[in-house]
Length: 163
Image 1 (cartoon, rainbow, N blue to C red):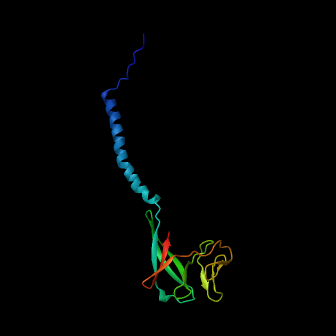
Image 2 (image 1 turned 180 degrees about the horizontal axis):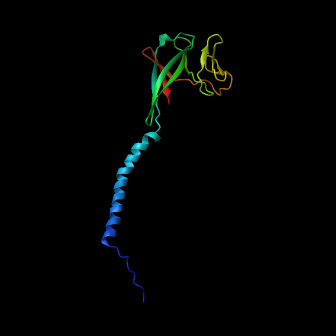
Image 3 (image 1 turned 120 degrees about the vertical axis):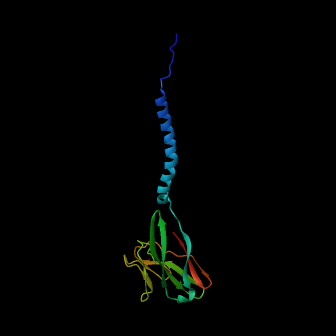
């Protein structure tokens, strides 16, 4: 003859404890998961910006001389808000032909300066040198100065900034 299997005896208190724990866990997850998402999500989101920055009237930039334009950008990263200053050199070659270069050296991100006497952009950190078109002449920079896309609207220069 076979054995009879008997289910374990569970009283009402044990059943209520198990069911209340199960229901409480589900309710806690329904409330807790959105709260955790709210707290953590700003820190893990990466925000890319793609904007046109006005550099002012075209007439303020003389032909043949690189002119530095500085602008600031505010970036929100999670709960941190930071404002950074950037620069760009506008070089008008003629009335309609121009170039807009970043003032950040491509070696270690130092700020380059235009030296009129030698007609070169010079990086003060490691003596990187660039010509008036942003091409590397000497030093450690691995590539030319970054070039901004630009457009002219209503006599104003606008540069395309991506971050």
